[in-house]
Structure formats: C-alpha cells, structure tokens
Image (tube, rainbow, N blue to C red; front, top):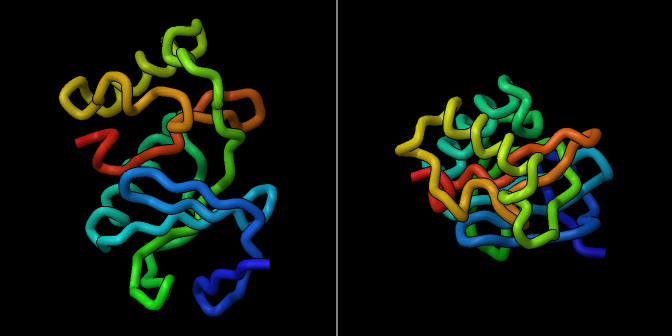
Length: 142
C-alpha cells in the first residue's frame, strides 16, 4: 500500500485524486491531505476553505500548511475533512447545486466565483447530506 508522511506521521493512502493544481490523498474515512506544488497556492486554498467551512459550505481544515516531500520534491499541503465527491454531471443545475452556487457567490463574491468550475461535478461533495465545495484552488476561484 502506498504511504505518505505528513507532520511526522506516516499514513496509508486509501485513495488518490488529482486536479489542475492539487493532489488529494484520502488517508482515512474522515481525513485527507491536499498537496499543492506551490506554497502560496496551498496557503490561499486553505484560507478559502476555512472561510467556506465557517459558512457551512466547505470541509473542515485540520492542519496548517506544511512542506511535504512527495515524488522526491518538496510540495505543500494541509490536512482536511473528507467529503463524498459528487460524480453526477450537471450537479450545479440541480436545486441543491443552485443553492450552493448562490451561497458561493454571496460568500466569495461574483468576481471570485468561476461559473462551471467552482460548483460542478468533482469539485463538490457531501458531508452528512450537506453539499460542500471541495476545490479551493486558484483555477476555481481566481
């Protein structure tokens, strides 16, 4: 089984997903580690995720941003609560998806919300039947 070391603890990787700027490692049923190639990207994504969690539209952040050696390179990541990923195309057009879009626009502002990116399949999920955003990278918000 593949492993990852984070903050002096070694975790078994249960599952892995990657996007344009982040790799996500599920390390338990409730926790995962998000890894970014650049420290500033990780810090900004973490800040957005903390804000989303405060308004109940994002998973809880469980650590600070910390350097991680991954594939013989230094990356930057943080620990996060796991959500069940939405895999249905067109989620943003469902009643629940539309409600999440409204909340995102209100909380982050229209200029930071990118239609078709911030709230869409694979960038959203559920925590206890509550829809949440799970992609806080610059491609979805900048």
